[in-house]
Length: 121
Image (tube, rainbow, N blue to C red; front, side, top):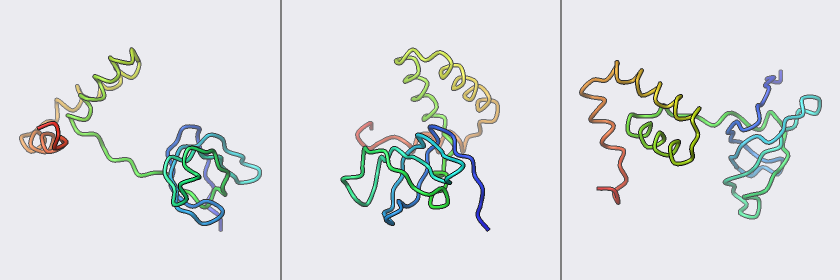
């Protein structure tokens, strides 16, 4: 039984190429009839594949796990949205920050401060 998935352009995935190399990247195109997915590879066991668009079978890949963003990460991304003048992204991020502010506890603040890179301290 083959799991049927519809891949969306831009969706981050991880899995194997048809040659068996581990890779991850984002979906460029999906062919439902052939069951193939074209992926722009950002990391791979074979370094020569990085930066290229490859085609692999749909069942060899799965969605890349996404971790929920912390408060500091959301604030950093909000700054990036301002720098890039992306109003829609900025509004989405500030809405998430606003929602989060209503749920913030003391433990949340402690977790946010642990996210800094060592060079930032």
